[in-house]
Amino acid sequence: MLAAAAAIAAWIVFVRHALRTRAPMLDLRLLTKSTYRASMLGGSLLRLGIGATPFLLPLLLQTGLGWSPLKAGMVIATMTIGSMVARLGGTYSIRVMGFRSALISTATLTAVFTAAPALFDTDTSLLFVLASIVAVGFFRAAHYVASGAIAFAEVASDEVSRASTLSTVIQQISLSIGVSFAGVTLFLSAGATNTLTPQQFILPFVSLGIVTLAAVPIYAQLHAQAGAHMRSGGTQS
Image 1 (cartoon, rainbow, N blue to C red):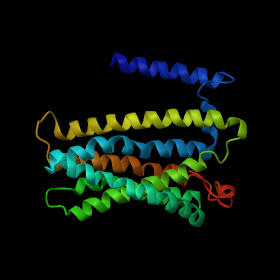
Image 2: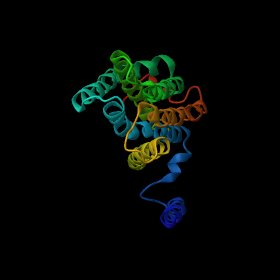
Image 3: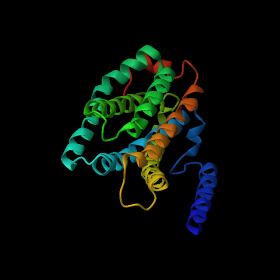
Image 4: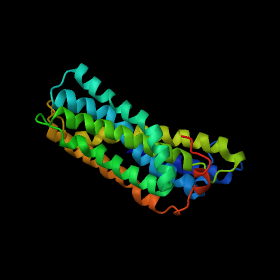
């Protein structure tokens, strides 16, 4: 409790300092820009899954389902296939639907497939497991193509460096929180038992899905034409 109180106090002091200083190392004033704020907040919620999945999924496949490390590793590696394909699909979805619709749809589908491993058990077909893992890799990467681009839609040229620095810090913090979130929810579900069953992973994965879905209301607040000027010139991730 003492450590938590000290951390909160330090955070309050930092925020006050950052808002009063003309050129702070981390410029929190950038969060007043709607597109940048939506990208940082919504993206952070989705990054909880990125931080938690490498911790939870191997445990589920190896300990819960009894797979060998080689089989589990090869199956999890297919996530990169979806991620690579999404580089093209993500850009296409932005051009067709616009940033807001693309962010809402990819965040929703990412939430669904982030929670999908809650359905895995010893009777689950390998095809369903593979499809779920490839899908979450695809929609998660497609989302970050849109999220990473729209973050700078309202950032002035002289603010890009500060915006990139703050973005990197927020990304790393959200990834770290994801690992902690995974550990806490798994402990709440499984307790101190030495034997993990597939049922004990339901709470962690469903919780991750719900947290990911919380990004949707954030993106829904964006203007329908947010980032429209970036669509005609192409979108970079």
